[in-house]
Length: 111
Image (cartoon, rainbow, N blue to C red; front, side, top):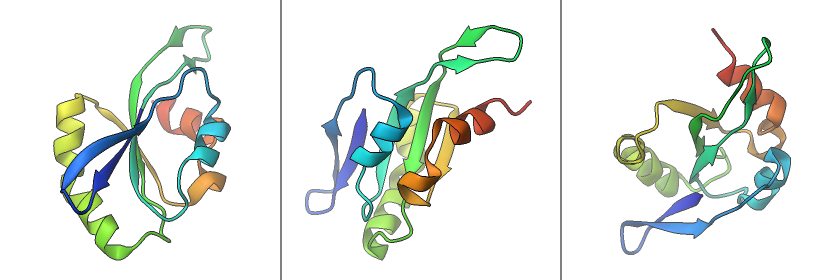
C-alpha cells in the first residue's frame, strides 16, 4: 500500500495497492521527486530456512523531492508509523537504485 500526503488538504491518501509485485518493480512505480509511505508485507527468508512475513514501513523520501513536501512528510511520519502499528522501518532516500530486495534483506536480517 502506497500512501502520500495531500499538501492542499493536509490529509493522507492511499495512492495505490500492489499485489505480488517485486521490490524492484515497486521501486519503479514510486515517484522520483515525491515522498511516500509504503506499507509492505515482505517475505523474508532466514539463513536457517525459516520464512517470516514482517510488516515493514518504507519511508520513501528521495533527496530530489521538494523541501516543503519532505518537511510535511517527516512531520507526519511518527503518527503514521504508530497508526499503522509497524516497528520495522526502512529509510530510502536514493530512489529506485537504492530500493532493492538485497537492500531490504540486509536491513531486516541484521541481528
